[in-house]
Image (cartoon, rainbow, N blue to C red):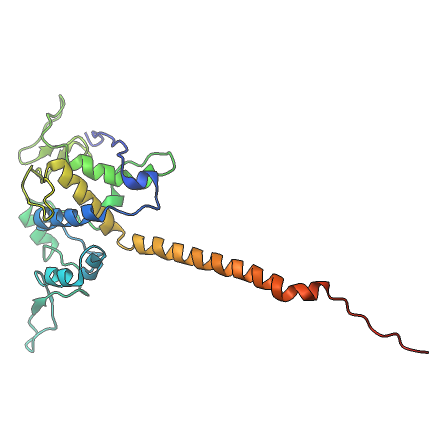
Length: 256
């Protein structure tokens, strides 16, 4: 029972063909809307600060988004806790104050943090490149779109649980999170289950490595700068050192 699950197949993500390519940030922005309206009440992103969202949102949007949450402030004079609206420098707050509150709100289960979920799940293939790194993306998409199937013979689904062939063991406590038309996208994209699953997968892929795009840009800047300096250095060495290479120095003969 513990090993009953379907292995994910490689899906045509953009980076499967070219690791240098960028994420689809239109999809990332839509995925943030899905996460905020559907998953944020139960799941956190503990490794992100609000200013990380400025990768695909304006600073004003991030400021307004952060102020919807409360973060700990300096204690009051009597030592009691105080809260304040969050700002862009604060860490994204957890939806629960502690583990016990999370278990009480979810029938004894603790919803996992989703910060690194895009790279923490899936069954990487032995082939390279590059499916191993993106197997988690395939897993998330298939998991979110595979509810509602009939369990195979011999698989018992306890009351309050759900069958999902891509989850380890085949039985998952999370109910189907997505339904067609449950949200209204800001850009008018039809909110089908597959579209929302793809978008929230893209958002979680960004959340797992929010600085990847910056590193790629820095690499190309350094590479181009180094190449330019190298060409200039070769040219300068030939112009400035060439006379010394072919100059003949003669010394006068000393008389007897």
